[in-house]
Length: 301
Image (cartoon, rainbow, N blue to C red; front, side):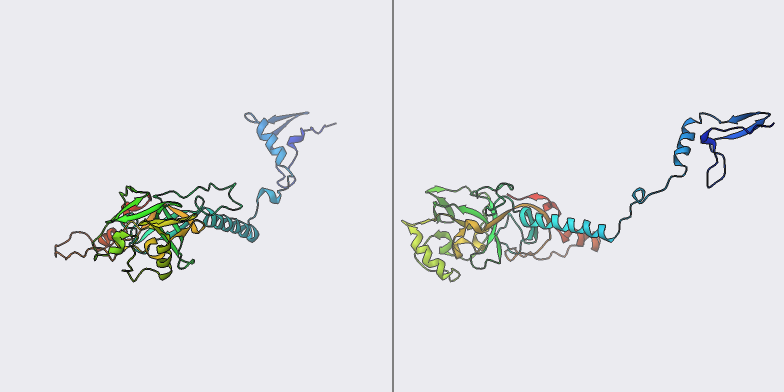
């Protein structure tokens, strides 16, 4: 009687292909010789494990509309948190802070340091306002408008300006950042505070408060209030014109200039053309004059 050879389980026929898995079989009499080739063990095991396996959806995840919407919402939430509590972009529109900040500078503002303390004080690193730093605050004339100036006077200081030089508590203030561009003579700016109403740009309400806050020729800054000046002293509308800034109106300070468009300033000196022939292409000249490339990523201080 002829015996049918019995093969190991891993050499059973695959249900779909009908081929023997893992090698060939040669019949010789009552013995079955199996040619497995070189090192068949791992291949056989892998084949055996894959036979009859059902591919599940987890092996090939499908990212549909719900997943895309969820990812978009997470991105929006993070962006809103950053813009609300940490950083905010803005652009300089006027020349009042030249030469520190130029017209067309795009700034990234740090909102986490100087914002009024609240429920986030234990989480975000708030600190006190310091003299000499540049800050962003809400305008005393229009709270919807944001201004950028430098902090000069702190609460309790006695301040006066003599021939353009700022004195705090009878001590001259070192101001390497201050610029004095040419302008018409204005005694109100050079000798402050004054009893003579000589500049029609001064807010009437502030003029009254100025007289009440002046003691012995010095302006006494009340508690919780700050005195702001622009670096471009002769071309800046600042606390000399509209008064003090409350501490809770200071919201941020500039961190870095992340881009700077070349924009004209009203205080720039106009230079006559010399009609020299140029060698640059029109596009190259436009690209060079389009932005102030050297100011990009410049740290503000």
